[in-house]
Length: 279
Length: 127
Image 1 (cartoon, rainbow over the protein chains, first blue to last red):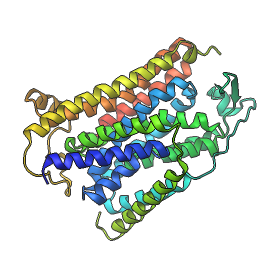
Image 2 (cartoon, rainbow over the protein chains, first blue to last red; image 1 turned 90 degrees about the vertical axis):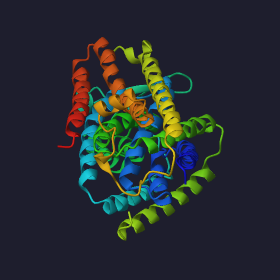
Image 3 (cartoon, rainbow over the protein chains, first blue to last red; image 1 turned 60 degrees about the horizontal axis):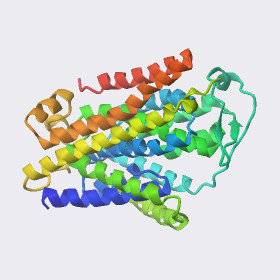
Image 4 (cartoon, rainbow over the protein chains, first blue to last red; image 1 turned 180 degrees about the vertical axis):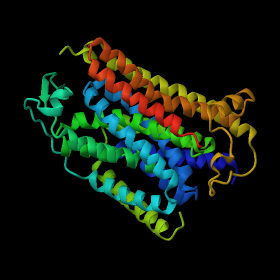
């Protein structure tokens, strides 16, 4: 295969990954790693390095749209970034020293977990209680505008638990080269009980910075290869752009199921190949 | 509390910063890609084995000297560096918003996040 053919095939695959990732809300990174390692036999360390760059690209691209809606809780995001960035560095160093077959197995597990989570029924929490403890000290309670422009106040619960969960999300992001958006939303929805409109955008706000913290480690360790970053970054960006354009119109339920099945198959292959030391 | 973030459209400015960061990085990666594909013939590099630092362009100085020689790979890596810097620039930019609100606590927390990233930059160098 010539470099041009290889680059074009990876480009088209990444475009599809970015498109589906943005339609289903699972992100592009989660398909890039199995695509590169299982389909093209790329070493998982190159796959991780390429994926983290794609994650930064898509989250920054999406954030531009989210930020306009004005529902990101910037204070909450900034505070939790302390946990996710420290976690990301720990994760990136674990990745440097952990055996690759073990990383493949953990990746497969997280893949299944994320697919299951994407079906979880969204419970829309709006608690409005006076702030106490950490939420008060850190001024985390806030409000967001509803469709009619009315301000809806909400409070943030269990700050310590959310912070700890974010640290774990950061470690997984750094270890596996993914955004771990699913875990971040889980921490904010289920532990901190904030409205999911706010948690989705705030999670995206944190993904780019978290990924950047581990990307600087990966870059200097030779995980980030230009020949792979070229087709993957551009492909994922274009795919995600079109995905977000039709997101409001398309009926995504059927697509979600197909995508979840594909992801589960990929996950099983990752775990199998990891267990048999082929990755 | 005054909501500077929404009232003064600083969020819109941050959104634009991110958008332009991504567009600029993509253009650099694309330019480098054209040069890379035009100059590099032959078969696909061996990605099955991990070469780590045996291959060039994994530090800022290597990337810069590669750009001087108009190496496509070096230009792509510069685009990647810009891309990584984009969300970090957003964090740095947030300090302005918090400073406007005179929120010392959050200026401090933002600086901590920046310090963590700088630390990872320093720790990332293979010793």
